[in-house]
Image (cartoon, rainbow, N blue to C red; front, side, top):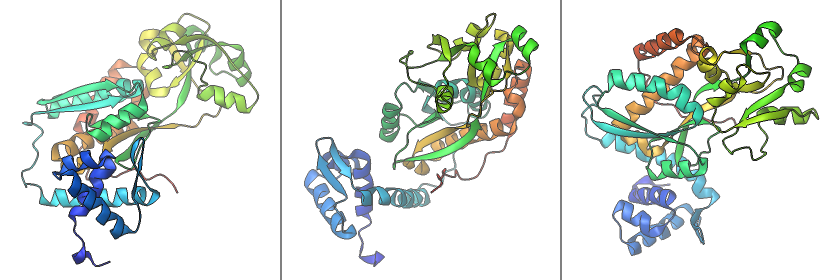
Length: 341
């Protein structure tokens, strides 16, 4: 293909169409009237020999060819924008900016406290707004629109318009009242099944199976869920002083072990770890302040990977680990997570 014969503005039009899925709104985004944007789409179709976007009741839906082109075109345009951007360096110590993130309960309890520590030390003029991820699909749409700057959590959906970074992996543990744990040290699979369980369910106990239930189902087994709770922080306090057992993410369980009076125990089943991810819009590459902010979140993730004592129950250990995070150097360019083929 002769690059000199290509109008690179067509690639900008393609990016806008991928993000808006609407010809009129895409034109407004890049300053083109509707007829001019329609003409650009016609030229794009001729250039790539594909329909690219098909009109449906839900809007302009990208074809497989368009989805395949989205990432390389987005990355190429981001690189061009970065190259042509004004040369003034971003100074976090004096910057004034508002950053908005959406997080799961896990991200709120584990990642956000360390992130706040870094922001207050290094960029006190940056205001942070944290929203809950109640509906992952809606939060993803907000990220794509630019209403939020990043998503943090596990099991988050992605799209061709977003970039995923894995911050670290998490594993499951059991928690029990400290007195019971001291007498048992470790539960067998049989003992685990005989005990009544406490379960956190953001869906409010709608019967949806958790990770443990799926593992047990493969063996034709089932546990008794005696208590279903709507907030993850309530789980260790419900377990304390009772015969209940619960399965929790290790780092969250460690946060509350001492104050709730529970102990961590190995899960007597092989449960796969899960990733805690950072998602952001591809346009972030052209924004120095946002690049710094995302790199700071990556620093937190790196520290959480490396500081094993952060999973422990000691509040003193937690404080020491957060201070260690603040001393870590910022990484270089963010590297997108690439799923295995």
